[in-house]
Amino acid sequence: MVGLGTNNFGRRIGLEETRAVVDAALDCGIDFIDTADVYGGDGASERLLGEVLRGRRDEVVLATKFGWDRGGSRAQLRNAIEASLGRLETDRIDLYQYHRPDGVTPIEETLAALTELLDEGKVREIGCSNFSAAQLVEAHEVARASGLRPFASIQNEYNLLDRRIEAGVIAECERLGVAVIPYFPLASGLLTGKYRRGEDAPAGTRLAGRGSVADDATFDKLEALARFASERGLDPVEVAIGGLAAQPMVTSVIAGATRPEQVRANARAARWQPTAEDLRALDEIFPRGRAA
Image (cartoon, rainbow, N blue to C red):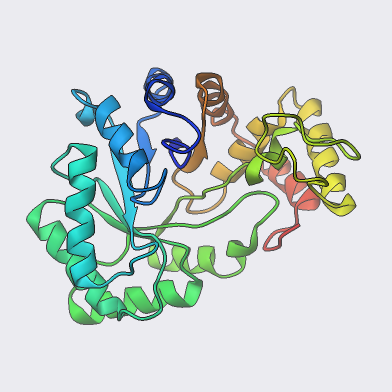
């Protein structure tokens, strides 16, 4: 399953472009939309989503996040949920995620406040993002000891070029029954096949103007990915998303888009189901538990 990431809404694209992207997602059967209160600046992504989903809110599973820059205290969380509900023009959040641990607020306080929101019906499920394996385990143990709701999901950076979370986080997710929702599945575009060794990044791409976009070792992997895809009649995006979706505990892959054609490409990519042999071959190119 592919989800629609919206960190570009309000930052790189405006209302009509956002509407076109969301329309394309729904037309392709993508009904999981992920945002955050900081995306786009000053809640812009949530505000745009609220407007374009007006009258069809029930057609999507809507996820947002809190706590990136103001922490996870109960007071902050209560303010954050009301602001997000208002911007999104809805009475509930399907998945409410703690964007990153603030390192100050006891996790019991955050989980207690989230459990209150669940009991009130303002939130249907809770998750975390950018947590380490140790932080995830601590949260689960605190929830169990205190009679609070544990996190149901974790959203961390994860792609074929960066598989570090397999070394700890995913093992704990398997043990605890926590769903994994990867973000940056295309590694900022490196896994799309757009970039070439020794050439500047194409104009208009995410990495344009940054000089060298990758070292030789990374380009070795990208070129091997291109051969792998070509041998199977696929493109690199299909392999990057389909290969990730096949990993343990992954329930949805969050892929951003600024144009309808990108949404359609991401939706097509999720249809490829690699065989066990395919996955072993990908492990040879992109070793498990490591980053490029």
